[in-house]
Figure 1: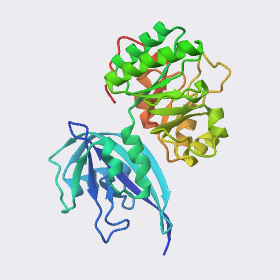
Figure 2: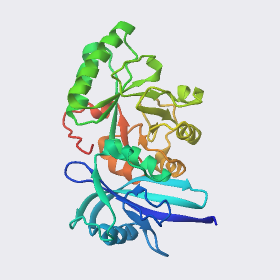
Figure 3: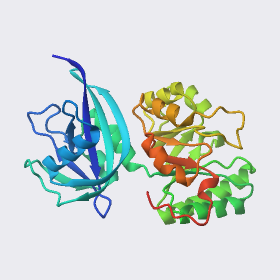
Figure 4: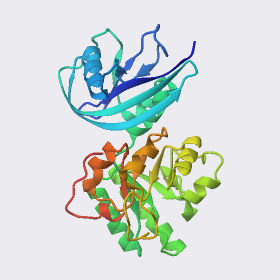
Length: 319
């Protein structure tokens, strides 16, 4: 029998000192039994998400949460029940992790999470775990400037870069791309190419679709381990989700010098849009590194930007 009441579930993502993520296996007689999941459980009547998260993680794995930030919210219809997964990154906890209910547990590298069988609602959580908090957009007016900007971005600890160099001749773009690729490989940073450049390279990690290219696409572009898109409204976000993209960028959150005519969304609208999709989304537009906490509280995966990652006095180690 179908349960029409939405089951609100608090979920915690714990990582150890090596960055591995804790997963546990559901009991065989439970809903979605036998599959792997992240620890947590449903809210009791009148209970807050934070209290449920504290209670469930102590009951399941014996730890007390000291600090946590929102990661993503997932709404999913299993056919027999509707669930809302309220997922939090546990940034500090006390106690020794243990299987309090004798459930199987493993610490797994984020990139290896896809090797395990999870309930369908957990798949966007895996994408969010595998993404960093910062997504830099790389531009430049010369090969030297592009390379210098890339160096600054990498030295500042950014873990994901979009190559969006549109002001150079084609031959210079290709030359700049080769140099940027080498630098990203040295830092083990993933690189995406903007779709407007119409470039391909076997060493590129992914493709970033412009909003125009996004709306023109009926299927997810093939041959890329990562595909993302630029979005400016809810319809574009929903289309990105429908195509099965890995993440999106939503802009502008605040007024920008580069696009003064664009009406800023503001954090309230930004957050309301994210509540209606199951997709990691970076906030973009008029933002500085100090906006990260606000972005996370508003449901964002993190911050995207251009100039904000070129400052030399920052250390972005939240990746």
